Length: 172
Image (tube, rainbow, N blue to C red; front, side, top):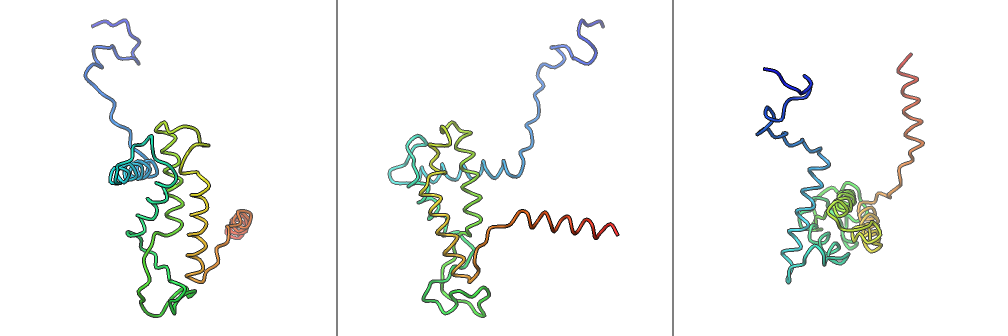
């Protein structure tokens, strides 16, 4: 039973018929794949159906609006008595919509998936179009006003300072 292969490299005959098991996708990669497939399926449901090579930012905007029907975030109308209240005391008839953070994350995953599927450069990516950024900004602002909570960007320096203070105090 002699072989010309070194001991750490199996011969080709001993490896025939064996396939590498598929690698486990990360949660992010799984979600990105699911989002991409959902978007492509949405394009097929349009009348007339839209091919991958034909869609643009208007289709992305219509997809975001379509997703609102599955939302879980209460967004009060300006005429609602609870408009601007973060914790209303009773239910109202205002619609449930997708939360801004969910839409923002979705667009990020779809931007990446578009480029991975040969969609072209980031400059031509419909998910990165100015109209999408404007839409997301408007959703963020309207949801913040409806809940009475102003949106503020997180100060990364403040987070780092808190972590440093915490690590110094926990060591004593």
